[in-house]
Image (cartoon, rainbow, N blue to C red; front, side):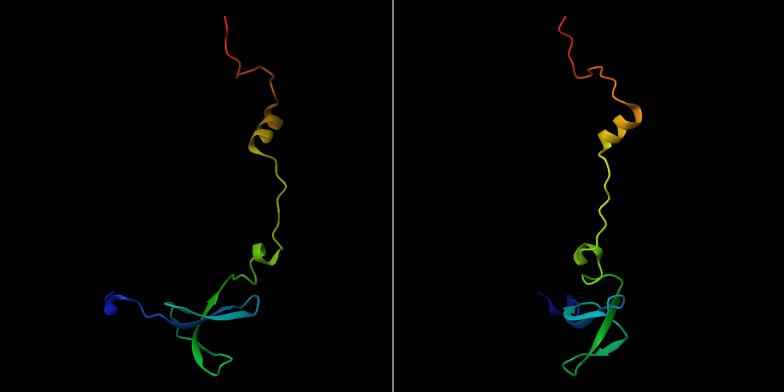
Length: 91
């Protein structure tokens, strides 16, 4: 690998402001803002809208929509004719 062509990979804090959750990881993301972390070091901070702490799928608060299938909706709207379109002529 050519070192001069690789992006800078460094510790970064990702913060979900809605959930009050932050985690330290390594990334190529950059930011002008910094945050003082628990270890006493200062790291760049990137604010995100949704993380695993606030996403409905991961929190178990996901809405499940009880909807009919497409065929059932079609049959409900237009009715079932009972004319066997799948039947083959044997004459």
